[in-house]
Amino acid sequence: MAQPVLKAELSLLMLRFLRQMAKAVPPTLLSDRPLIKSLGRLRSAEAECTRCPLYKDATQVVPGEGGAQARLMLVGEQPGDKEDLAGKPFVGPAGRILNQALDDAGIARDDAFVTNAVKHFKHEMRGKRRLHKRPNAYEIERCRWWMEYERAIVKPAVIVAMGATAARSVFGRNVTIKKMRGKQHQMPDGGAAFVTVHPSSLLRMPDEADKRREYRNFVADLKLARRCLK
Ligand code: URA
Image (cartoon, rainbow, N blue to C red; front, side, top):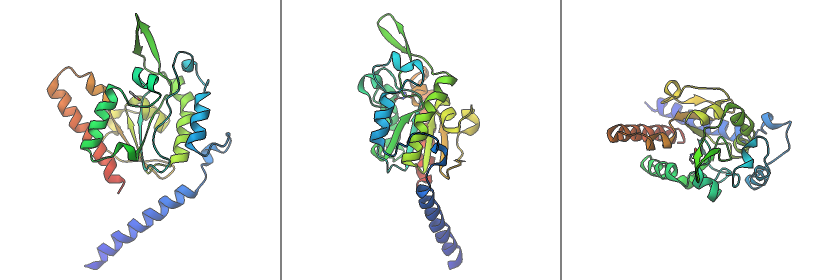
């Protein structure tokens, strides 16, 4: 009777050991690049970014936010108008939904590292308004450089990619949200990844019942990720 329990405990110990080992291994992926070992230095380097033209029309870069010890990384698409002005990710309307959903999923936002696939606000002017424009494959690819540093420094046990742009950046290829959603994906560095919708897709839903249902699904995806952290 005690044997299955012992087995489960041993597997858990082994899993913890492997995670520790993974943290100790230097990121071979980044071996041919300038060494950036802290989030502070990364922020300074990101502030100088000219890897694609998006820096020209943005107010500032919006780096990832959170501690280097975070075990959960949440990845969005790109900063919006409010984020561009504040220099912080997810502080506008999409951020409010994300905060609510994290709360409902039992995740403290402060424990997570929150970032975006693209670090500058891409937009077009419509009168005086700055309208969000989706980043293209080139911009996502150029900005992936920074997310790879974030991943190498934070070494999250679990990554949640919110939306197609985030998923493309996390997996390095185009993925279909519908196919990838609701499953745990193994990353080459030993971490786990989940795919879900972007919170702003909920904002755009005209039907209240659809919105409520999709919100519940979003929270369920976050709960899956949380369970994987245990
Ligand atoms: N949408 C995103 O993808 N990221 C933000 O930071 C804000 C809105």
